[in-house]
Length: 202
Image (cartoon, rainbow, N blue to C red; front, side, top):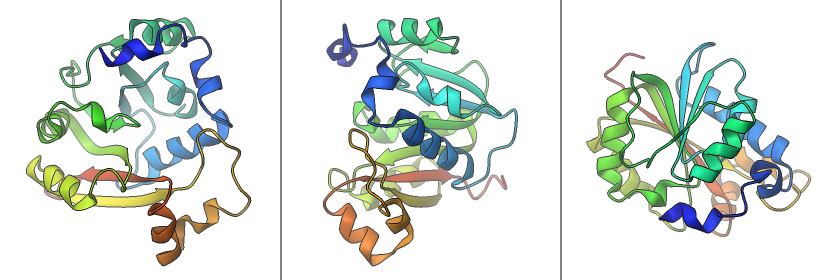
């Protein structure tokens, strides 16, 4: 099981997993709300492979539902008042449709990426938001899988907030720098991607 590596490490997971958890998760939450179709107050966000659900604290206007395969992570998050469910992201389907689904630091957990994206598209009404390491996965290949799932619109944004080191002054400003940002991505950091269906009209 993929979650077994986290055994004994779940206490204060969010606080310890990031050099600056508040800044990192606040910036991630902003992109969840604003990249691609904008989320509205009250929209449900389903966070697959959510860990202890730390993102919930940065989406106060949305209804947050987290899913993680680790029972220890789920217990830790529930203990902090977060709405979490223990399940495998490859198999989980929510009881009703959600406005947005997120998959952060976990797309590689997909047993079959195209199948997972199609499943997510079936219960997500507005957009899927995920991060992608462009040195590990070709954006063109992922785009093809998204289009096969009916998600034919894609917006991307470099994300230059380090996870385990303090942010460097001015680095985040380079996210919109075009060629410079692309050069940085060849060495480090990730893309945040929002995918949705242009046919839905949403």
